[in-house]
Image 1 (cartoon, one colour):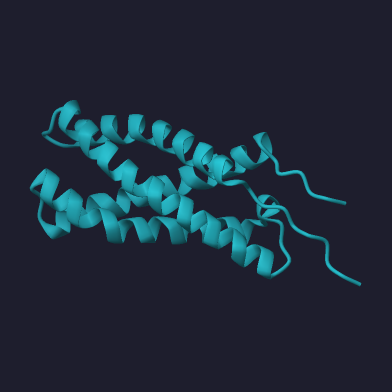
Image 2: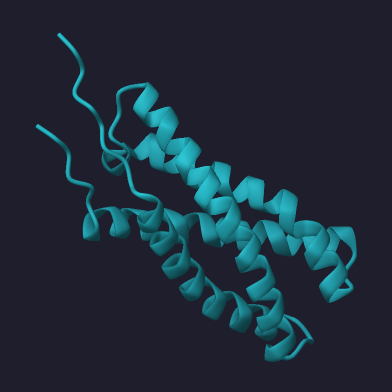
Length: 147
């Protein structure tokens, strides 16, 4: 008996996910950073856009690879269980810290520790956002499976 073919998201669907995710996050991140720092909204907004572009590229690649791991283990990615959703969100955010920390330090003229503290707090908030957004997205845009 063969296992049924598991259908995953298309490339365009992954791009739609990343764009919606990032647009909502840019608005919140830019405003929050301006409110928490001595910088104006334009400066923090530009930083948010730069980090967003990096995050969108990483997101498309990361989500594709994570889905492939699910498929390899016979799981349907859009029906990921709670532990898988938590692993997905946490893994993605830790990967982003590695790419965003040097940029935040340079752009904001912050020390390593100040930037790291900010990045870790932001990461904790974004982990929750990622979990909730992905859950809502999977319910709003389910991937039809073959019977």
